[in-house]
Length: 504
Image (tube, rainbow, N blue to C red):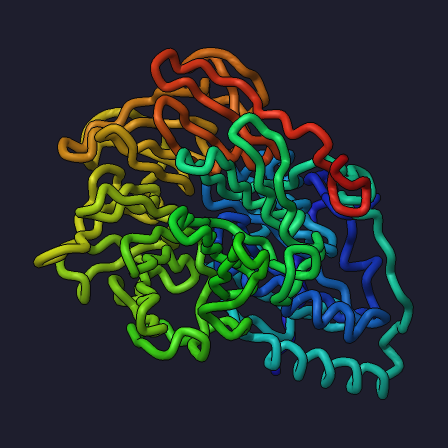
């Protein structure tokens, strides 16, 4: 294994999750893994449990440093990176490499990439992609053994001050990813993603149920004992009083029955699938890959499967699940279901004839047929992995930035243009996209139309004349009067963070 001296880490760049910048010189005697990541990337999120496993296995000899080299313009902002660290509970130091200089010095070409540095400060390995835990584990073990024999390893635990210690998250909601309103029952369902639970209230904010312990896990049972792991999209069957949930980091679909007040897993095994090519199987026996949103049409639940860049279909009557559209390639390809391609689809809605998809990594809005002779088409957006920005217009001239939320209502498609901190409206037949809410600045300000502010809004749901917004980084839910475009913040009296207090 050839050894190359590792380039120095800049000390004058922003460092997060640590009380001071780290240098490779100060880390001599330890194995160092540099994780080059960007917080929009689903693959980067998938490797976080692997890194946590390795850090816990080798606490006295391994240091992991995240090098955040942004893809999107919005991800270059230090505060936005800090919020991502809090949202995904990252426990290692992070260097904010906004200009990608460290990325270039280390000759990185893809997210995520790991550079392994030995206790003497030399690069001894490099690997890209997810599913590399065993590979990294083996290299770390060998390096420790080798340098123990040489006397060049220094066994000692290194502690650092984390962002969550500097900025404890005590808000009633924590990074809510999706919201769902139901007019038949006058209920609002909130995926309280950062608190790993589902909050159910009236449309006015009176809390009716808290489902989940607030601790991450995959446990079925009563509302008070069930556990979720960063749940996202939901769809409600009012007739049968059942809520279906995309339990994203559990790689599962959950069913919440309000009649029996029980939670059960109806698809997924709790393990992430590495099979990208289209396939099918018994839902409870089939591994899934970061389901991010769901929409129920009859006995069918369509799933935005962000991790495998596909749309999936669960047949409730047969209990079978299968790839519906997308080859698994991360791209923008229109045409038949079998030849189409998506890029981290993260939001899904329908008018009954087509699915509307927020295709986040290509910053585009797609439509997927669900009736006779279904086809996939791009409604608006550049369709390119690096074609993003903030531009209203028609069809391919439209520029969005990592859109995550979508909702069909009153013959329009509404879009949470997440990294532009805006809500936009699309005339989906003509592909005309216009900014309706938000001035493009990250913030929390109620108001009317473009005179209000959001902070990475990720979920939308509409009923009658109201649009509800999961304003994710503000950790709140917003409500819009569609006829006036007046935005207000929904209050949930008595709702508290887990372990802070209980609803009164």
